[in-house]
Amino acid sequence: SQQGEEDPQALSIQEGENATMNCSYKTSINNLQWYRQNSGRGLVHLILIRSNEREKHSGRLRVTLDTSKKSSSLLITASRAADTASYFCASFAVNNAGNMLTFGGGTRLMVKP
Amino acid sequence: KAGVTQTPRYLIKTRGQQVTLSCSPISGHRSVSWYQQTPGQGLQFLFEYFSETQRNKGNFPGRFSGRQFSNSRSEMNVSTLELGDSALYLCASSLAGASGRIEQYFGPGTRLTVT
Image (cartoon, rainbow over all chains, first blue to last red; front, side, top):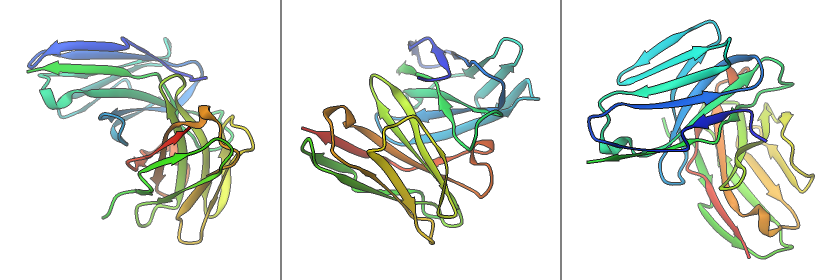
């Protein structure tokens, strides 16, 4: 089973609008990462936020992390049709025996031109 | 630098057969992880290799195995294939150390269909 849940499962917006995706996880984490996947292809790393950080920016991306609520959000501002993809959060938990990312179920984002 | 490469990209096998998938990490990356992606279960961690040793393993049956070579290239093998093994198998590499602490770079995946 996956540690994280993402909300919403699907999101459809117009180009130029902002898109917000939320992610929840279950255990204490070392960091949380966001990835994008286009049409069943490989994942592309977007941004990593450490457990001691609350907010991080990268271009049109803004990620927040609330460790007290075990949740994170990804905001894509001024969306473009090219942002159409599935977005996944992935957590790295400090109590893992080794090294692995636990992925959420993903949010399918469609940006209409 | 060349990205992570996976071969083959597409594969069709019959139930009961076995399959071997290959992954070449980014040059200099010593950690290789494998994930299975299905519509029903999403992305699930299979195992991670570092310096030819399996460091961590997900909750998959023993039919799923892997190995890593001295040049960091990795293979995963699935024996006695079942219909439920149909999935996109993704390989990811990262720099040495605790791979989850930094970003992973994913290959394009191998689409396995079991009939």
